[in-house]
Amino acid sequence: MTNHGEAVSSGPFKFISQGAIVQEWLVGGRNIVLGFQDPAEYAKNNPAFFGATIGRWDKKFWTGPNKKLSSDGSEVLVYSYKSAHLEEQFPGALDVTVQYTIRMEQEEGADVSILEIEYEAQLSSDSPEDWAVLSMTNHSYFHIGDKDTIEGTKVTILDNTNIETNEVDIPTGQFKKFPGIESGEPFELGPEKPDIDHGFALTTDVANVPMDTRRDIPSFKLFESGHVFAFLDIQPLSKGHALVIPKTHGAKLFDIPDDELAEMLPVAKKLALAAGVENFNILQNNGRIAHQVVDHVHVHMIPKPNEEEGLGVHWPAKEANMDELKALAEQLKSKI
Image (cartoon, rainbow, N blue to C red; front, side, top):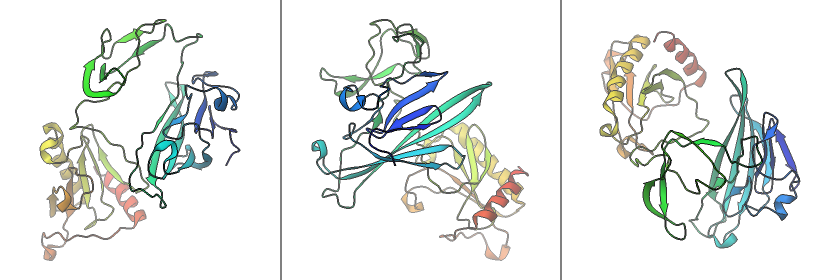
């Protein structure tokens, strides 16, 4: 835990508790985020909210950071904040955290620093309301050039589709192409043009929204290709019980591209051969009736080593020993 405004360093990064601000990110000895050397300036002279965690608390002091290590040895800093009911007129009391994960990697012989930011919020147990309005993001401004201004910086936008706004900058819900900028083609920032203050769309296909969920549930990967991923079930119905999932998310089989579906059964076949079983179930279940919290497509390969048990499938299964699953995963992977 730090005093208010005190900077905390981790590798090439510095953070301060006011606003859970990213104060410094050194690349090649240069700070690429705009801000102040003196942390006190953020309280007095920061109308642009440089580096702050934006929400209903961008100027507030957060508790922390609490430091810990992730499973791969990366350092993690976690700031927390309790937002009172009707703070800045927003309903609901919230317990909020922002987690910064710092990774150092090598790419083509060069040191590369990576900052991952994760937000989490939940209604406080003493909240007088059972709902809240929330929108969180980081408000860092980046300057990666070697000049005093961004003039001359070359930028590439993978998709020039941007969100249309009305005269008071409220999104209309429509998308349009940004004039004069081509998707995937570099362009140069001038002293005034192009005037970009827009929200660009990462995807406009609402039926195919990628989701990254991170928890500490163990996973034992058996196989991965460009289309599918296979892993052991951690609540197996029998030894070697595995699942094959497509990399495209879909609620039903009909939502998955044919090329991904075409690879799922051959992978299930590989798993059955690696497990050394002749009798097995291939199951594909969906929806609430299959106890899915988030609807998705997957295929079970369930070995049935005992003929007297028949092909019946009986849930719920029991939690397996994780050490035994890990050893089994290594054994199966060597045979795939």
